[in-house]
Length: 191
Image 1 (cartoon, helix red, strand yellow):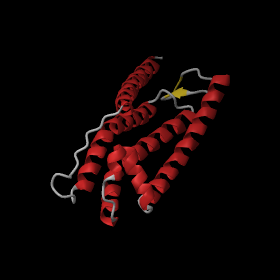
Image 2: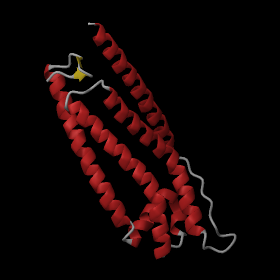
Image 3: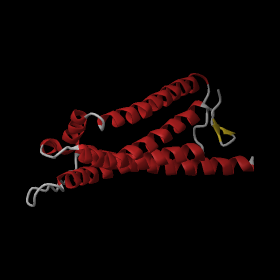
Image 4: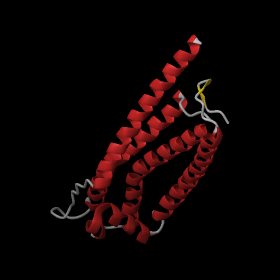
């Protein structure tokens, strides 16, 4: 296999190309499995009240045990959780497409850069959505509590911070990739 850069060869051949194709196909499959599992498990979480409670404990800590969890609140929690889950799925769809490009030998292309940028945006957004989701869950689920017992939760974990940083790095690398593809196309047109 010879990897191509928008029609221009980048010289990726032999064992390096074989390893990249193998790794890319594996990650493509892992992404597909992840998408299916996330959709299935998130759906199940909101059908089984004890699983919903566990999700609240994960997001809110001990406060999650004190929130009322009737059918209405369970549906409300599902709506709130849908936003970060949708962003995560969008990111996985883009990382899957990125590795499909790599498996076809399309490594330094504007298309690959776009998929990487979108994945980076999804990772960055996950870091920002973590605290917002926890706050929204606590507010929405404690709204029916009597005055003085409603909850406002503000969280920001090291995982949120790392997601923002890693997402920013991925977006920057995608911009560099896009510029490299543009320069390679420009250079190829002179030859």
